[in-house]
Length: 76
Image (cartoon, rainbow, N blue to C red):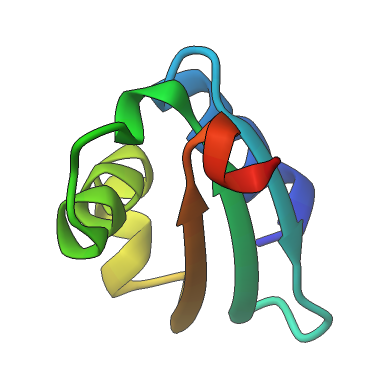
């Protein structure tokens, strides 16, 4: 699994989202996701939205994903 693949999946699954994904070992990743759809949602709901874009990869190929989820306004 590569950071670019995860970024593409997140951006495809959350239209209008911009994601920056990092990870050097192929199983542990960090992502910053900025998406207008996060407005009015608590952090847990935002994380679930991102996890939904990755589906079964979260229980297999991706061992850990640290998320920071922001609206465009929060990202400044």
